Image 1 (cartoon, rainbow, N blue to C red):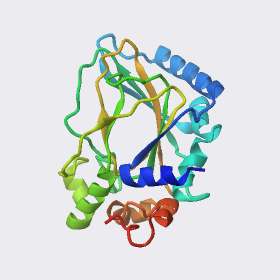
Image 2: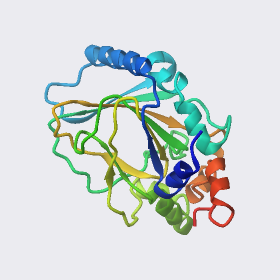
Image 3: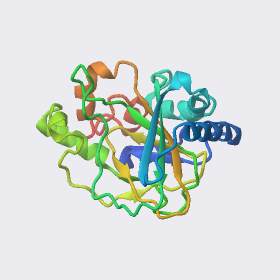
Image 4: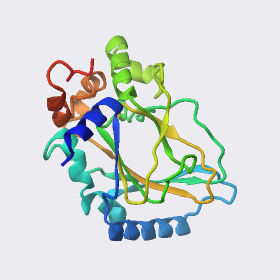
Amino acid sequence: MLARGQLDEFAEHGFLVLPQVVPAEVVAAASRAIDRLVGHDPPGPQVRGPYNYFLQAGQAPALAALLARSPAFGLAESLTGPATLEAPWQVQVALNIPPFSHRPGMGHIDGFPPEPDGRPGTFTMLAGVLMSDQREQDAGNLWVWPGTHLTHAQYFRTHGPDAFLTAGGYPPIQLPEPEQVTGRAGDLVLAHYLLSHNIGGNTSPAIRRAVYFRIKRSGHDARWREFVQNPWLDYDTVRDRLGPDRADGE
């Protein structure tokens, strides 16, 4: 379970970094699976910066175990409520290959281009497990813009949820100063779907590795329009913590 202070931090900033959530043996097994994946289908010798693999979770048990055989999924449900989240069907292995002297000028939200049925690819929460140490900045870290989950919701309340499609993942909001997520292999990152984020540069000597899961609350797809305007719609625990005066994100 998350502490009250952690719920408050998530409500204000839109993300949490929880240290050493995933057991070392689960991280090690997942690391070996990534080694095999990269060995079978390596990036080209000239590739620098982000390089991703997308797999079905059922076909990547060692990677799916990062959620299923650790407290990670339960911690995610500590934000939304017991038995509210669906197990994700897809796993993303995200590499950041140095040298890559990139500094993102802005962040984005996922879900564009839309799904075949025209619905934006929204979800409830991004869960990421660091698979390499990223204790310093500019080591391929994830960049986030704290508080933008609330700013995005305000934008969609003003302009309507279909403005998502017009914006193409980059709603024209005012951005605060970004923050680079730092941590160690086995740390868990939980981020609100509406939080602006991006990939940063990697001037370290090591390839950055992370595994991401996009998690939905049951019934999310049918009410995505309401969700992008009310950031706590899927988050019962956070909504209860905020109380009725702040639960709509305004």
